[in-house]
Image (cartoon, rainbow, N blue to C red; front, side):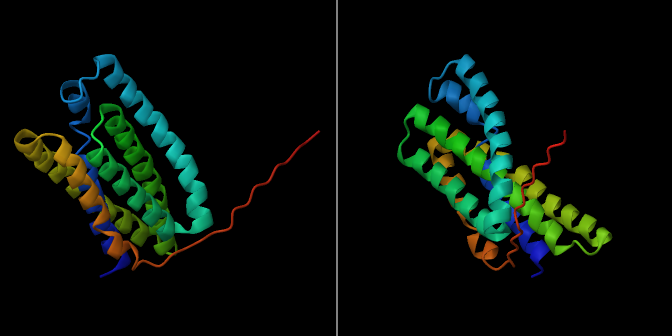
Length: 194
């Protein structure tokens, strides 16, 4: 299987694991975990802030550790955060676990985008096709996740979604390990002019 196809399959699984949870987290925080509507609003604000921080941190990790190592670290961490939220269903811990998943998923996508660029950097037309293929895989996961998540939520409740998200997110690790890794040099320069 070509590396870009592997990334599309991995992206599909990861977005499936995320989209099982995200369409329902606000509703679950409000009705299952009895948080106020104000807290739910604050949760979404914090999610945005966490994602921005993840993009910055992951950029350094991606360059320092390499694309694949960063994707593996962030995938495992996202899966662990969901598993811990499943094991310890305290409402605040669930909210923090989902925010942690958001951090690690956002960080993963920085490394993921970088590796696609690395794999196809010599040919712009193949780069465009590679990103398109990646988006098709990711969109497939986002299309299936809410359906599966809604079905499980309506029958078993929200807590099993945390476990399902954890398991689905960790599944593609074996494909990640088969990708070529790229590390770049981190350079920081400061220019001062008088």
